[in-house]
Amino acid sequence: RYRTLVELSPSGVFVFCEGRTVYVNHRGAILMGANDPHEILERPMFEFIHPDFHQEVRENVERLLVGRASVHSAERIYLKKDGTPVPVQVEAARITWNGTPAVIALVSDITDRQQTEEALRASEERFSKAFRTSPHPIVISEIETGRLVDVNDAALTLLGYRREEIET
Image (tube, rainbow, N blue to C red; front, side, top):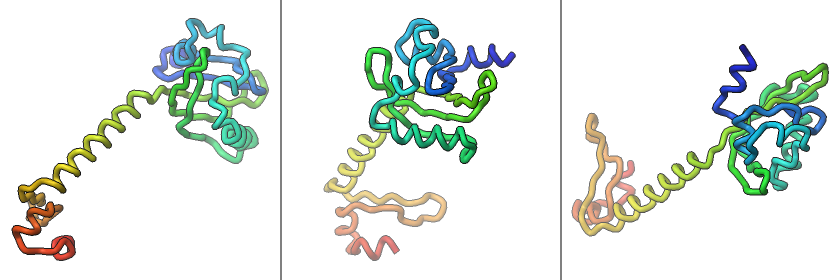
């Protein structure tokens, strides 16, 4: 049952033991640019991690293996087989693999999420610029309380207030 659960996971599931990859599910292989999990097995763990994160990952793995942390969660850059970087969310924990301490990592590609977040930031910046620089007075208030949330400079001029008077 557990093997089926892991094999069907939408996340890549990796087990690293003594610095090498001892298990990877099909989704993990695909994430790393392989067609088959066997292409990934026995490869060094750090082969998949961008060099900028090597020291931090070493420290986190050590904390997990000696029991100073139970779970570690982080965003990282992993490297596909061909060296292409891929942003990932990693959840890692200590397990025992054939009697040896090991790390299990659930890895998810966060490319789409990061692109969506960037698009949202850009949209917010465009809205903010349009709001602030519009020659038309704009007032944003809470419907229930009537409390002013924000006003643009044109509204301040029209109403005869300074920003400090509105923000209090």
